[in-house]
Length: 393
Image (cartoon, rainbow, N blue to C red; front, side, top):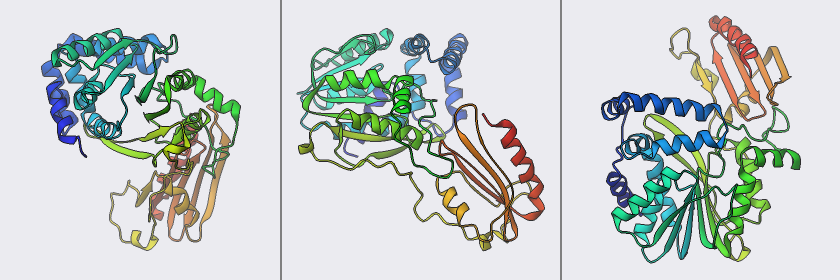
C-alpha cells in the first residue's frame, strides 16, 4: 500500500509496538504498567463489555488516553491501524475538509493531517481525555491543519460541512449486537422489515449518528465507513441504513483481515460512499461471503489420522451449509428446530453420511457448523448434540 511504510513510522512515533504472541505482549504490559493500572484497566474493560451505557465506554477511553497507558493498550491494535490507516489515506483524494468521527486520541487523524498538510482536518470524539491527548500530540508535531473537538453527536450537532467524513469503529458501538436474523435457518436472506431495521439502528446508536454525519456532508462529499460488520446479520442492516440515507457505493466493499496480536480478525468491510450518482456506483450486495471452491471429498477422510476425540472434518464458515446439503446418502438420525429466547431460530441435526457420522448446526444469525467423525466416535457427536441444545442462548 502507498502509505504503509510512512504509517509504520507514525505508529512507532506514538510508541506503539507490534507483537507476535500474546505471551510476549502481556509480559511487556506487566513490565511497563503498574499493577494497579492493569487491575483498573481490566475492571473498566469488564464494565464496558457488561453495559451499553455511554458513561462506561467514556470512562474506559478516558483512562486509556493516559500517556503511559496509551502506547501499551493501543499496541494490541497495531495491525488494525496498519490495515485501515493507509487505505483511508489512499481515498482522501481531492477532499479539502475532512472530518474524522470517533477519532479517539487522534492516532489516525494526525497521520492523515501529516500526509495532506494543505487540507483541513477535524477530529471529533466524546472522550474528553482522548481529545486532550490528541491536542497534545498535534502541538508536539507542530501541525497547523488539524483540530479536535469533544462532542457526542447523539447529544449535539456538528458545526460546518465536510468534503469527506471518515468513521472507523465509531458508528456501531454495540459490537455484540447480533443484528438482523434471516428468514429461517436454511437461508441467508433477510426480509424487508422496517420495524426490525429501525430497532437495529436504535439499539446500536447508528440512526442518530448517521443522520447527523450525513447532514454535515457536502452535496458532492464522500463518506468512508469501517465497522464491525463482517457478519452478514450486521452487514445487511448496516448497508440498508447507509442506502436509505442516499449513500451510494463508489467501489466494492473491501473486507479486511488483521491480527490482534495472535488472533486473526475478519472485519469490515471498508465502504467508500458518495451522495450523487455522478460519482459512480456499485450495486449493494447482501449475499453471504462464501469460500470459493470450498468442497469436501468424503473419501479423503477414510484414512485421515486424528486423535480419537477430534473430528475428521469441521467447518464453521458459510460454506458449511452447501457442503451439508451435498453430503452423499445423508440420513438424519435426530434433529431439533426451535426458537431461542434471543430471537434466533436454531436447527441441530445428527445423522450419517456413507461410513461417517455428522452433526450440523445452523441458526438465523448465519452461524453454521458442520462436524464429521468416524462411526466409532458417534457417541461424541451424540453428546455434542445434547450440549448444543442445553447450552443454546
